Length: 352
Image (tube, rainbow, N blue to C red; front, top):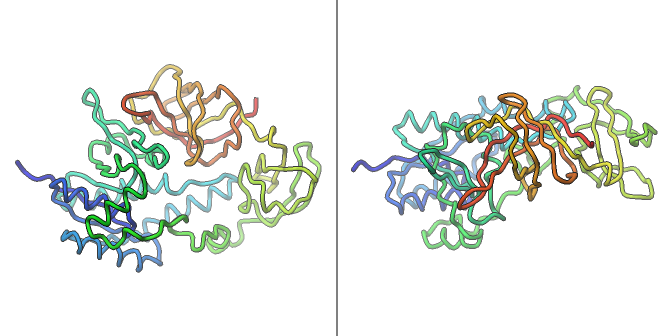
């Protein structure tokens, strides 16, 4: 029997390191591939190379900085539209499970593996994306835009890891130096988590000052760029109203930021577009647990397909801070865990 060849995307972190080690333990012909997406790659690359050396597997480096410009442009332009981008979701589709997979396949790989906490299972001959056994660590949300035909080529060895501490202990058992490495909490291409600095550098003339108003249109103050705000934001508004206020709407056309109460932040419906279905595209409305951001617990709703790539979501109860630009991910009840039916970009939040 021919040993299956797998390329593991190694980032220099403990999750991807442990994933690569588990693949080696399971008998795969494994290689590591590190993708360069920004100029501050050296420390992470050195960690990834050390892991591959510790595991005794080949190490490849793929410089994708030029191609990553597409993600950076999306990031900046989404803010220009008054929306909040989710670059990790798009990167997984275009870069990691797109370009990196193309590279792996050209080098004889049967599979591409990552350190994501999620499950890919085959049921009745169909591959599907499911929540990880540890739902608190589940990352199926950020994989929702991966092309359906890719599912049979993806391995997710971290699916059954019980906790992050379990992962660190596993890495330590394999002798990996990354077992004690701290997790990064920022997006890879945002130094010091300073979104505004990246936007100012790449779109220096695009962002303009504008008014901050309440939902009745009363001017409350001024701001120096809509990119400083996101739906649901409460802190850093620099507006004293004597009561809690939240960003409930951003109008990119007039550069207006609208503040309102917590009640005014709630939406009953949303419209999603550019939907990526990971099951047979449904023709009829269906029940779904819908997540509207990565750390959202999900809310039950009725999802009605409007076309092949658009849908209306009507929540059972109003949901707070539905944010255009983020992904809405549709989960269906299945065994042994919730299955991702698909995901789309939130185009509009509707209060009624």
